[in-house]
Image (cartoon, rainbow, N blue to C red; front, side):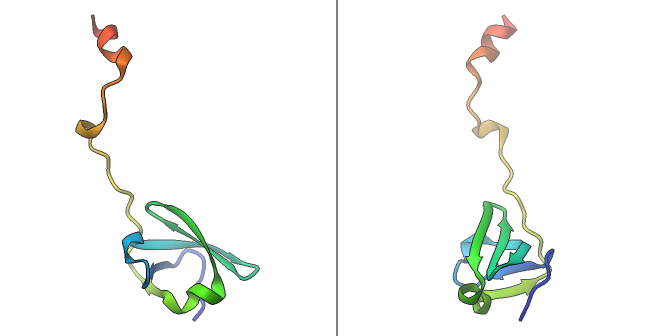
Length: 78
C-alpha cells in the first residue's frame, strides 16, 4: 500500500510514537513527522508496519508549572 504525502499513519512496531504525518517519500525512503519529531525510514522495511489513520499527530503540551523560573525574572520584578 502506498501512502500520499499528508496522510496520517501509525507504526505498528513503534506505538509509542503515536500517529504521524507522512511528509515525503522519495528514493526508497519515507519521512514521517510524529509529535516527538521527524523520523526517516527505508520504505521497504517500514511499509508493512504502517497503517493509515484519520488521527493527526498531537504535540504534547508543556505545563507552565513544570518549567523552572528564569534567573533574571525575579530580579526584574524588584
